[in-house]
Image (tube, rainbow, N blue to C red; front, side):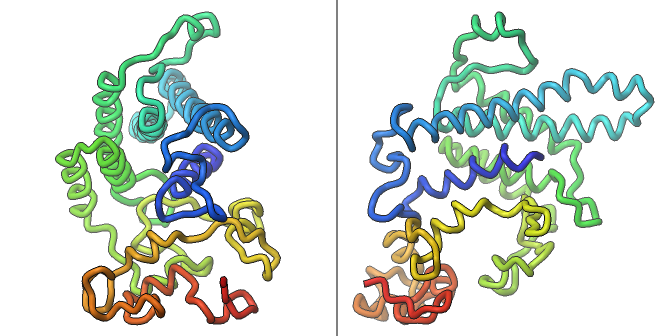
Length: 298
C-alpha cells in the first residue's frame, strides 16, 4: 500500500494521454512514439516504471512466500488468505503495467538471489498475460466487495476494475467486458451526484470511488508540490506547465448530446458555450475567475 508504488505509475499514465499537454509539447514522448531510456525525462520515466513495479512485485512475492510463518504463529487462515489475495492483486497490477510499457519482461513469482536474477532473461508477454489474469481471479475469489467501515483496502471491485483496464490495454475486449460487468454487478458503486464536488478534498468516501488512497495535508500524504505547481497558473504562483489539451476540450459533447463536429450548437469562438457541464468543471473557462485572477490564457 506504499503510495510510491502507485502514485507515479498512474499519474504518469494520464500525462501520456492526449488529454494532457506539458506547455506546448507532448509529455515523455510516448504520444509521438519516440520514447527511449535516454534523456532526462524519458530516462526517469522508464527507470521509474521498471523500478517501482518490480519493487511492488518483490514485496508481494515476499508476503506470498513467507505467509506460512503467520499460519505457524497462529494467525487465522482466513486472514492470511485475504492478505495473500491482496498481494496477488498488487503483483498483477505491477506486471500489468510492466508489459503494457515494455512487452516481454523478466517474470518472478518468488524472490531470487542476485546471481539467480542476473541469469534470468525476459519471458514473453503472451506467457505472462494468463498469469496476470490468474492473479486477478485468485484475488477476486477471496477479497470482499467492501469492508463496511470505509477501510481503504483492495476489494473485489478494485480487482475487477483493474483487470478491465489491463484487458483494454491489450485490446482484449471480451475479458474487459466481463470484468467491468462483474464490478457493476457488485452493486457497490454509483456515480457521485455532483461531478465537480467529487474531486474536492472535502468529499470523502464517495460511492464512485472504486480504488483510491486517502490523502491528508496534516499527514503529508498529498501529491507533492511539484505536481500541484505544474498544474497551477503562474499568476497564482505555479509553473503553468501542465494543461488540458485541445483534444480533451473537444471530447466533451454539446448539450444536444452530439460531438462538436456534428452539433449546430458548437461555436468555435465560444467553445465553452452549450457544452456538457462537466466541460467547465474540468477545464477553466476562458475569461472567468480562477485562483484569484481572471483566466485569460491568450
